[in-house]
Length: 229
Picture 1: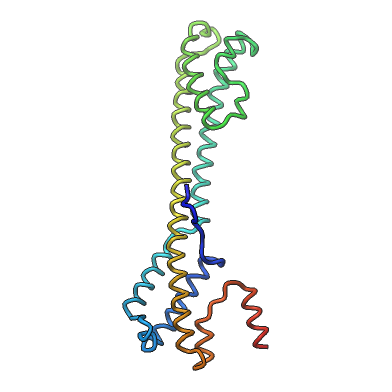
Picture 2: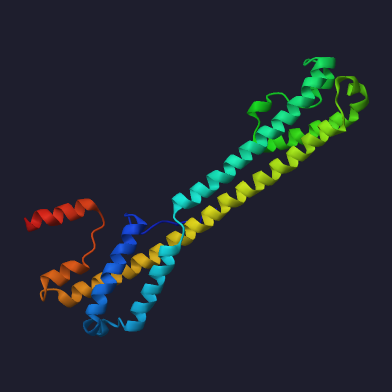
């Protein structure tokens, strides 16, 4: 569960944030002499550069979602294998007792295609358990231990795929929170560099002042250009 108040401070893409900070770091290196009067030292700039590298190397959400989707597809494949193994057993039960019989109903396979993951896993284990109790009764239909072992093995593999998928979902949540947390720190770096730079060049050098300015959206940039025109 995400922390209460968990949000991004900036409303533009992380790639733009990275580019904006790197650009202003170059200006800050150029203006380091003036920056020092605001407490911004070469060591502090190096620390921001280190955060920039860490931020750049973090996986983005597209990468995380893509990885999650791969394991979701694998889970679906395992679910289909389990359903096929269950149906192979239930076809034999229906052959002898019919689908309306109590013996058929005991397997709990009604609406197999609509079951949730948890229901399907429970159903697979139940089919293997009930099937073993009825092996002698269903021997003439071809039901044997191997058929039940296929169900049991498919259920085990499906459960493993479920767990891996859930792990990937959790990993994505953790990674997103880490990226947003570091991104917010990085955004604070951007604003700090911007504020210092603008203070240095306010009414001194218009071009340098504009180099430190930060616009939160394309709309603001358009407004700024219109004023210049």
